Amino acid sequence: MRRIAAAFLALALGAPLAPAAPSHGISAFGDLKYPANFRHFDYVNPDAPKGGRIALIGPVPVDTFDSFNGYILRGDAVQGYELMFDSLMATATDEPDSLYGLVAETADIAEDRKSITFALRQEAKFADGTPLTAEDVCDSFRLLSTEGHERIRITIRDVEACEVISPHALRYRFKGERTRDLPLTVAALPIFSKAYYEKVDFSKSTLEPPLGSGPYTVKSFRPGEYVTYGRREDYWARDLPVNRGRYNFDEVRFDYFRDRTAGFEALKAGTIDLREEYTSRDWATAYDFPALKDGRVLQQVLPDETPSGAQGFFFNLRREKFQDIRVRKALNLAFDFEWTNKNLFFGLYERTASFFEMSPLKAEGLPKAEELALLEPFRGSLRPEVFGEVAQPPVSDGSGQDRKLLREASKLLDEAGWAADGTLRRNARGETLDVEFLIDSPVFERILGPYVKNLRLLGVNATIRTVDEAQYQDRQENYDYDVISSRFMAGLTPGDGLRIFFGSDSARKPGTYNMSGVASPEIDALIDRLVEAKSREELYVAGRALDRVLRAEQFWVPNWHKGSHWIAHWDKFGRPAVKPKYDRGILDTWWYDEAKAKRIATGN
Image (cartoon, rainbow, N blue to C red; front, side):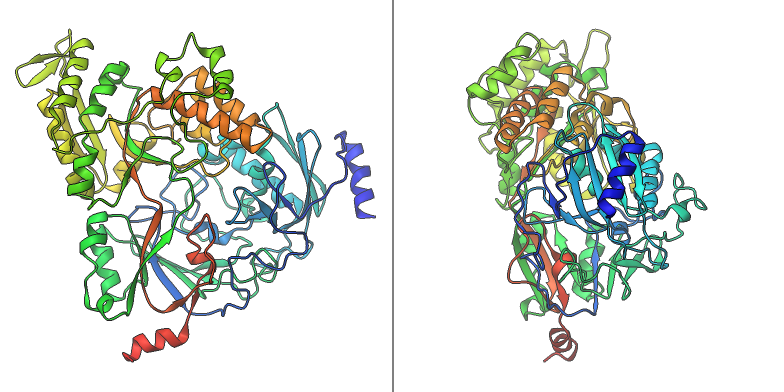
């Protein structure tokens, strides 16, 4: 009866009716691992006990916060804010892109993928007990599309409308032809209370904890020190299949520290329970303190099967001095990864070459016929290298100052009009070739130091600029830098989100991830082809073609990657036998083990 009523109302609204095919889950290409009657995800313990606390350092390298709204550009968002909000559907982290019903009981994608209709669970409610309805979902879309962060707005720009059909049914309508990923995008958007944001200005950063419908609420906080989230005993969705065995900690606390050394000392002292290590030197040499030696602290290597993405030093193409590709190639040649990995990283990393490293979208060797079919229409405007062996970072002799590579770099700078004038190079206007590396932590100085030394040998006036977190964020969002370190991650099924990193529109708008300011109609067109892919194989082919074009532009110095997470934690937790394939699963699936914690406390 409800479906008939909804259909009647859809006709009244003038919306085209889609074939009735409601599903408990959706994915980019229709493949789902879990059936409609699944009881829980395979990577959880459905009987995991609830209780205890976990204190850790968040994944984002910031040392303070001034806002509980992480969905706008303003302010420094608190870690873990997403724990307060639900979405229409929840991600299965053992599949490439599948989502299953959370607030939405079912989803119905139109045959032409121009719309998706959601039927909501009537029991869904916010933390204050008020019902969560279709009005809240559509108003959340309105807020995000008009006042949300540019990184979000870019991904939903082709969402034409969110229409309320009934209190527990709504439809999103899409425009254009590149709609494959839009059902997934809107299904994963956070849901806000319309009534709450009628009283609170969504566009302003605030330290007033917001009203959400998610598994946690803010329990206590002190900016620059910590935030603690408390698990909601009355969480409406705690027993749904997508949540069974998840969100097991009564408290989740994120601690803030001014530098990595302070965070490490906090782990040793037991102030925090868990720390992910990102520094190879520390992982190899620093974990020798008493609590680790006697087994109270464990050093774990968790496999990471997600695409590693692309970490590198990105040149700001918005600045004239980087427009000449010969300059960019020369700067690339001066970085000696082989020496760096051996002497600074204890040989623990591999060199990154691709923007889709550890992914089927990574280009290899010569382009295959299906890749050429996508590239040939642009042959006249693409670099010739695109049609040959895919661009690779240079391999040095490991000496730290490979004379052959440095001679090649010097020649390229000469050709680009940067003539040697004593110790520095100058162009025809007498300007020196100044290259400043912007960083927010002294940790990178030991890595950049040898690189800067090589650049100065070439006559480049290279310097390192270390600023505090606030300055760094401001300069990053406004592209006020020469070179910046960043990591781009595309996920397992990249789509419209690639425009945030490489789209022409994102090059001109503040606050995106387009660090180099890449703006190319050919790259835009290849992103379109990737978004339009009708199968995973088509997606992979389009990704490899795009990878070739991006790598040929040489707008970055590729860094390094590894296929694992380095985790150190006090032995007071339990975890499922199976780790989610594409996630750490720590906050999501681990639990507090009282017996283990008691042994640590008593020393037995």
